[in-house]
Image 1 (tube, rainbow, N blue to C red):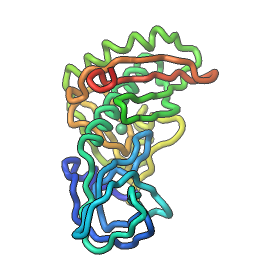
Image 2: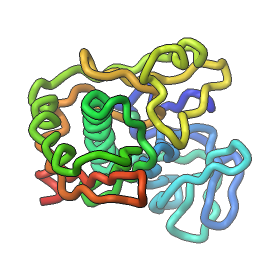
Image 3: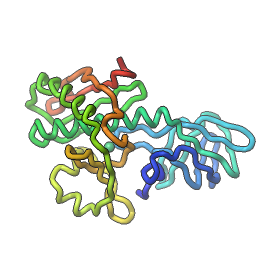
Amino acid sequence: MSQYLCHEDPTLFDVECNVIKAEPGRVLLSGSSFYPGGGGQPADRGSLLWAGGETAVSGVESRGGQIWHLLAEEIMPSGTVVAKVDPVFRAQMQRLHTVLHIVNALVFQEFDGSLVTGVQMSDSGVARIDFDLPDADNERLRALEPGINDVVRQDLAVRTALVPLSAAAQEEGTLRSKAVSPPAQSDGRIRIVEIDGLDRQACGGTHLGSTGEAGEIKILKVENKGRHNRRLRIGLVELAL
Ligand SMILES: [Zn+2]
């Protein structure tokens, strides 16, 4: 993968660009700041503007290494356009995603390096995360909630850095997912997301600048998923409750 614009500049939402190729209901653009999805985080939503009109961008699809923007109408815009990311949706995903890193960090510490087996964020202010925890007491997992909110209150800085994959692989706990690791860039480096003093892990998603922006969270449910997995449902209090 190459470096996304949304990683280079998280405050960039609107990008003027050209339609390189169009099919009914989808366009290939010369550039945009849409997050294309991955790691349990859905693709950004937004809109596409051009001289003759506007339509919603309902999703993003990677096909043969190309990132296509999916349109709400079966149209084929051409020429110069402006690809606009919905900042409200992006902010919500950043909040959920950053909270999941905190949850992940605390589970990793308290449950002997347990790894993540699945993640899904939704647009209702709720996300779920699964861990490989065959023998865990669910009450102990529920008891993590005050600790998660404590990290939010501490407002720890969240930073990203690109490091060689070989170095990341040697650093214990950096590759945290049992199922997939984020792909390295074409230059062989991998993106590390660090919560100051708490956690470092490889991730290709979008996050907050500091944990305090997440706001209070609640653990909505802890359930068993199969013999090995425990699933936590986490909600942003302000949005989901
Ligand atoms: Zn992440």
